[in-house]
Length: 488
Image (cartoon, rainbow, N blue to C red):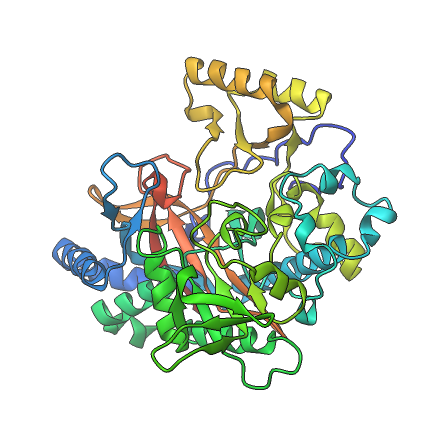
C-alpha cells in the first residue's frame, strides 16, 4: 500500500505495490462480491436482446431529453451523447461509507484552506505550506482576498474524483472546486435505469440520489447574505453553446430556480437584480456555471460578454453569494493537490481517510530527473489541465509522443506533475463484444452549506475501450449508474 505523502517529500514517491492482477469489483478472488450477487443472478438470465434493447432505449431517451455535450475544439461543433452502460456499478453501504467520509473530510479541509488563504493565511505562517505554492500560483485570485463568505464555504459543490485499486484501497485523483459538472448524468442515469429495468430495483435496496437538487437548493439558500430571510437563487449559465448547458437548465428546473445569462442580470444600488416580465427582482445567491475570468468585465476580462459588470463589487460587499466562490482554482490546481493531506492535518487535526496518488513535482530538479527517465511508466499532467487534455499516459504512448512531451516538460517544468499508472479497478460493462471488464473512476459530489453531505453514489465514468484508462467523456469515456446498496 502506498504511504501518505507529506506536503514536501524529500525523495521522489514510489509507485504503490502492484496487485497481482487488476481488481475486478464484481468478481474478486473469493467469488462474486456480496453487493453484486443479485445483479449477477440477473445478468445470468438477461439475453443479448434485453441488453441491446436497453442500450438503444437509453440512447433514445437521452437524445430526446437533450442530454448531450459539446467537445471544445471539435471541427464540426456537433453535440454528442455520452455512451451509457446499462450495467450499474454496485457498492455495499460499508464500502461506500469510507469513500463518503473521505470525500466529506477532504471538502471540509479544502474549504478551510480557501477561507484561510484569502484571509489570515495561517497555514503559510505556520510553515505547513510554502508561500510560493500560493502566491506564485496563477490561479490565486487577489480580488478574493478579504471576502467573508457565509459559513466559510467557498466550494458549495465539490466533485472529488477517486479510483479504486484493491478491495480496501482508494486514491483521490483530483479535486474539482470551480464549476464541477456531471451531476445531471448521475441523476439521469438513475432515472433511465429505473425506467428501463424496474425489476432490478425490486431485487435491491438502493440508496436514493434523487434528492440531490433539494439538498443543493437548501445549502445555497443557507449561504445567502446576512439579513436575507427568503433568498432568491439563480443559475448563471454561459448559454446553450456551453458544453454543460443541459446540466445548467436541468438543475435550475429541478431546484425551481431561474436560469439566467449575464445579460439577464445587472447591478444597481450595490445589489444584483434580475430582469423579469414582472419587473426587477433582487438575486441573492448565484449558482454560477461560468469561469472566474468571465464573471465581471470590470474586474477580470474586459472582453467578457458572459458576466455582469459590477458583480465583484457587490460580492466583495457581502451582498450576493457566488457558488462556487471566486478564486477556488488555487485549491483544485494539481500542484496544490500535493498539500491536501497536510491541510487535513492542519485544519481538522485528523488523519486523511483517503490517500493522494503518489505524485512527483516536475518543477523539483530531483523529481524531474526521475520523471524524465521513467516517462514510459508514468502519467504526466498539466497542473492547470482538465478533461483529460494535455496529459501523457506513458505506457500507452509512442516514442515520438514521449520525446515531444519531454520537450514540453523541459520548457516549463513547473507546469507539470507526474503520477504512477494506477491499476484502476474494473466493473462489468456491456460493449460490442458482450459483457467485459472496463476501467472506472468515481466522482462523488460533496455539498457544503450550513452542513456538509454527499449523496450516495456519484458519477461513475467508464473507459469504454479495452485496456484504456481514460474515462473522460471528451476522450471517448462513458458513464454508468452507481448503486449503493444496503448491506444484507
